[in-house]
Image (cartoon, rainbow, N blue to C red):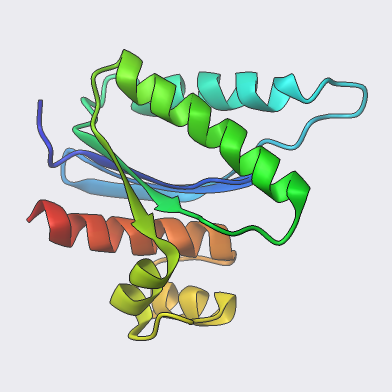
Length: 152
């Protein structure tokens, strides 16, 4: 399996993602907000299905994600923890290595400062030629940039 194929995730209700597969980079943001009348678990079921769809036929060699250690709210922490659990279980089930990268490390590698703001991350992604309008996608691209350096 090629480690050149990397999936990078900024986990959250609006998950940013960047995928380098077969020499091409794709990216975007996928929302996992529960719909009206749905149980909270639907978010995690949709995320699990989405992981299978995005990886379908791509021979993902590694998954990198933003390793968040502090959250502004309890709801954010619960969402992140649930998505992270689904992602790590998916990786284990599919024999894919996964690596968490610290928030400050990602920002410093991408913008040159570990406390870069959301606007800085978006601007840097745009400067690098990505058509990005949200911070979740910009963060995923930043993770991919750092993961590419790590992978060599």
